[in-house]
Image (cartoon, rainbow, N blue to C red; front, top):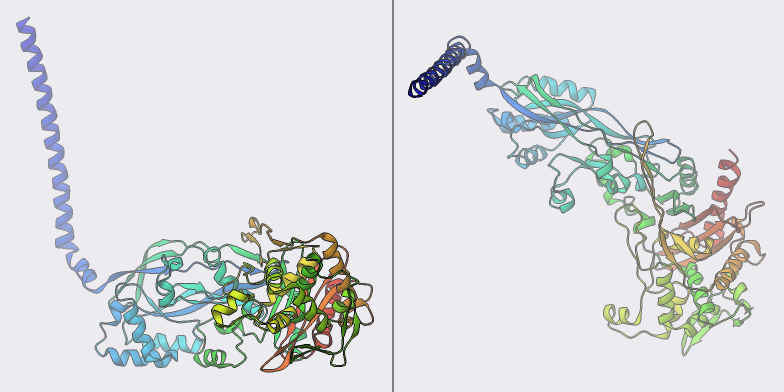
Length: 601
């Protein structure tokens, strides 16, 4: 037993010896290989790598992702991309120029920018010293030649190719589409942009801004080996970018162009809105004056920018979402529904219009100075009699006027999918006491009852008043987004239609107002007769709004066909005169083009 134990111990000891010796041999071999490699690198290639270490750097360059395209509802291209030459400077290398001030001035001169701009860019990214800082996008062939020549003597200049935004139709739907440009320092501080970096290109307005996260895609990265002057030697590694998702809009480019031309041919300022009342899809949205999106395809020229921001007509302002106007006689629709629902009037209730209405010693005139004589509800709407609605408003009181204004969505944003929408004002006794520090007077009620005074609304809100009548008592949320797609038109996401508001009013009252709106257009005495289209029945309402800055604003809103409406049109012409004379004919042209031309095609 003892002998067997001794034999087993000897056997185990021998195995351990063999394992240890094997490990020692392996260790010795690895050490020899590493020593040999180190000798090779130091003795043979040392000078070569030493030179690289002293003269070369690895720069990280963003590989900009192309933005998704923007299409109209029929896949006509509205915004796309094309290659553009980009001039950048690499701060790490640029700071090595002996005469940096001279280098800055020469680069600025070639690119047609201010030297201060170059200095600001250099300071902006000091913590990203090896990342190129973009100076100018979309340089011309001449600028490319000059900057290439300059880079032979100035270190740190980089020229690359990136996708640049192009807008196929210049001014078409400019306020809706929007534009892109480099992110500002102010926006970098916003929570929404916390993952963005200086130099990133973002949507600045319209759907370009609202759907920026969908359109922008994912940037890639290139690791570039550069020499001491910042010139590219090799691409060490590349992570490919991913193009953004395409966005299909609800607008019809043909209808949009037609509507814009109606305004342009008379040099009108104002708004045209066209929508599908059943879905809330915006088929056209015009705000005039507008601006040329091609200005923003590259870095906008300073002179063009100054012209835009100094223009007294404010072409950058999106009038249909941001413009605030008195709703005028369009507001007689909520007032009329309210009066019927609160039983202040019935359709046969009559008031006499002499052209002027007195509250104590204060005169309030009707738009028809000679008066309308006796008016029932239907004629009062059809002829837009102010005095009828003065008396109705006083019977309702400001509280009821406020109630029905809010019921029709006034005082609240519609939630349309573009930035900057305003909500307007629906006044009340409390509001006036807080803002004006004065009580509410009967004269305030009189003015509010015809949509003037303190009340303001956007054209989108006024369009929704018409939409609620088209839909027999409800309005859908207006929107521009129809779908998100791949380049192969595979739909990734569709818009989900949403009801914006529903009127708490009897259906028979809504039908009475619809009948009155039909008379506006089709009765011989109606104010909207110039909107008529052959063999097309419609309902509408004119509006003529006084303002302190000149001629009255002309408005007209309508839906068609009268039964089962497919289209809502709202027109506003600033300082245009009468709604029936100016805005109604424009709406008629829109209806005619849609039903007689586009639908028949």
